[in-house]
Length: 193
Image 1: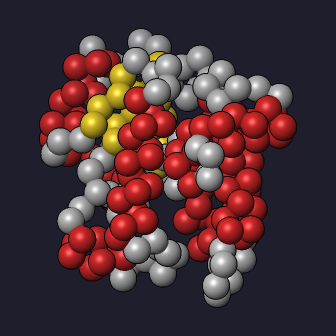
Image 2: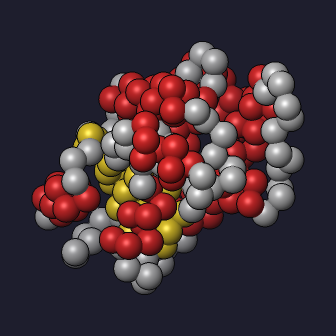
């Protein structure tokens, strides 16, 4: 693909929808890739594992840590003039799906932490691809391979649907709700050319 302007692709969707797999298998190693921040924080022990019982306070603090880390990563990468194409495993707006009041909570946190609105941090062309969540049996099987995956299927589906709502209400012009990986890639190529 020929990139005439700085472009980013945000791969998103509910838990176990194949975002990390797609990034590793469908994008070359010579492009900049932003990993899923939540998994990164947990795998590297930058944030403690959730407690037993009520996780409300833990989840709020975890979302703050994700937001701050995601913002720093995006800011550093997108302000480097050498980066013309970036693919992300989730974007800042994803956090709204995990907050009680959704985008309202995220907007308040963006203003509090960074003094800006959710979508104004980047002037790049943005393509959002919302990957489909697998069926319940497949989800449960995939969940077993990731010790940091906490959501049961009902919660994963709920998060997936909230992510769709968040991005459909966003100012991004190019939001693709998933088909197969090949269909997604063709749709991305069509937008880029």
